[in-house]
Image (cartoon, rainbow over all chains, first blue to last red; front, top):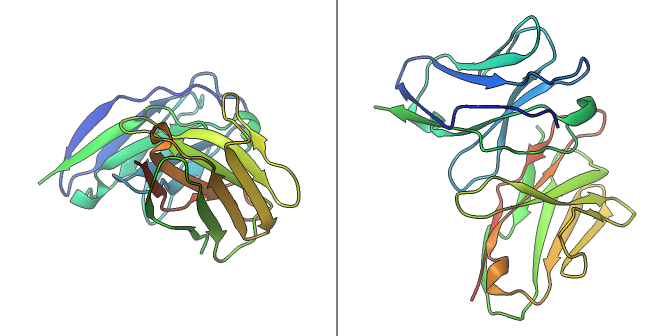
Length: 111
Length: 115
């Protein structure tokens, strides 16, 4: 998988937008950016993925820069239940079938 | 849709016994499932790839005779930890992707404690 870099931790106030950055400067043209999160003691949860266009679903928005070397996951109105470790993953060769998890970003939503 | 379940959710066993963990895709078929292991305060590490109807492939450093994987149907993969020891205590998680998609969905995990 292409190497990704994420800040180890972030805080966000409840009700505010949480913006989680990810650098993936070695990404190839056919490789997607996937975001997962892991709430304590649970399995990872799929959030969103994208190739080059910005994406939005019921959980979050994904903004990918034009050069595709970085992306930002946006949780528009963070709640306490969004406290989790967020992983940005770029599977090798464009296939998500095998995922390599880095350290991720611990997001703490504060009341 | 795309729900993956695991059973049991937690298990405590004595050293030397074997433990079987089931991973099921509830609403889709999956020819491939993946098994991960996660130690406290660490990230997920891929252990093996489970292939329906054929042998599993194991990551470097994972003993295939200790972690037996069976993928007998398109909705079920099992991981058996044989002769478990305290160092095998961990959080075991499986994942699967619906056919024709690439997005992996994860089970809730099984916490194993070997005494």
